[in-house]
Image (tube, rainbow, N blue to C red; front, top):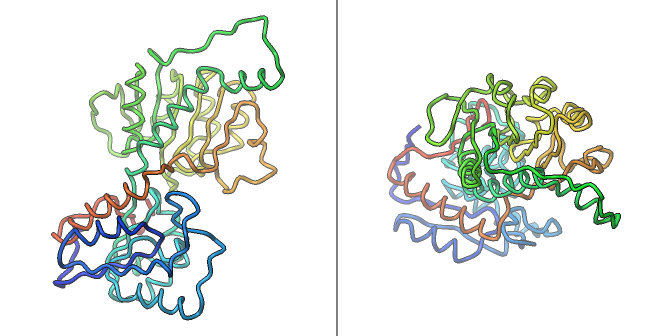
Length: 355
């Protein structure tokens, strides 16, 4: 959908913590741009790309009034207010000028859905995501997970902790010549495919719209996933959480895998039936699972995934890197140029399906 901005001047409000140097980059995109940035109203970052900021931060009543007054003057927001679904819901109701919000997350559909806003309201403005910014760190993490599984790192760590030098020398699997299936050949999936091919792996995967892709041996829809995984050595999920992907990785899919398959999830936890995954781990269909996302986050203390000897638990941090704020700001500046020029914005959140 083309943007319909008709004003000569555009006001942007920075709603989340951001370094001043990146704010200046946004200001430099076009002379028509006015950027509202009041760092004293934003929580300090505890680490690079801490978009929500320190949870101990509290605004005074006067600061709270200034914060929302600033946001209500803008047609464009950099970040969800307070980096929360509730903030999104409030600004949608209070700012009739709002035309576009850029989300920090690659998969912001869940937060948009959690705002509780109806479709009619959501159609009044655009929400874009930072999809693609996280492709490289997520792809590197996926390669890390595959290699951990192939090189038996979990077993090595257990032997080291027990100071055991096994008499039987167990061989490891080569990445070169192995097959990986990537569920979701979007930007993250394609970057994962690039790294996998660099390791000498053969790559197949799924895509909503099936088309031939250079370097990818076979492409199907998710309906063909069971057939693809039947001879895979590793399977990587990059799919977002939607009603159409919920528990896609079910008992049927895990049962279709050959024994010893390595499984990596950097998409969304709801795409995996965790009971089915545990069954597959226990019966050997899956030899190792590297998981950055879970159906419920934080992962409940009583989840057996915490202590499973064949599972690596990552607390939804694999997309993070010290360069994230710079990369997101660069993406926003690119999108801002498109917005001003009346071009289509990439990575729009669908207000019906939330992806």
